[in-house]
Image 1 (tube, rainbow, N blue to C red):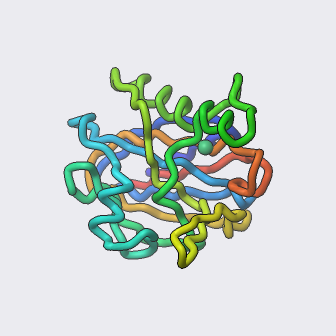
Image 2 (image 1 turned 90 degrees about the horizontal axis):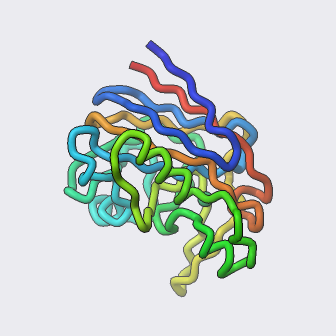
Length: 197
Ligand SMILES: [Zn+2]
């Protein structure tokens, strides 16, 4: 079976997936970041951890063949296909305070933190104060002196990443709301997700 979902620009949604499902995340227009977060369906206290993923892979970057891990050091996903090979594990979800810090645009701004929390609370009674998701297609250049620079994503229209679910999870994802920087190439656009089982 195959189910298709559209994450509208600057919005989020949740999707229930089962161990063994393939999750295709497709950048419809190109240069759009997806804040990808998830929790274990059977134990919402176990969730996708960018920090543990960096630790287990001994790398700041992940691509084909690498896995994404939970706060409990269990495999949550494995990357099966990756057209872009530039994703971010460093940045927390955008939030009004971030928009104020950099751009003074926080008031009433949509944000990935709010969109993902909305998706989580629809299913579980949980809300996270901070989330560092797997920022799919986000291109963070890491310089030799440790500085980081957010560059326009390398994803072109139709590019995708395919993840294998290694456990039963609730996905909570957002099409990132930043139009103030190069993060989404200056324009926010929708994302397509196809779940195959
Ligand atoms: Zn965002």
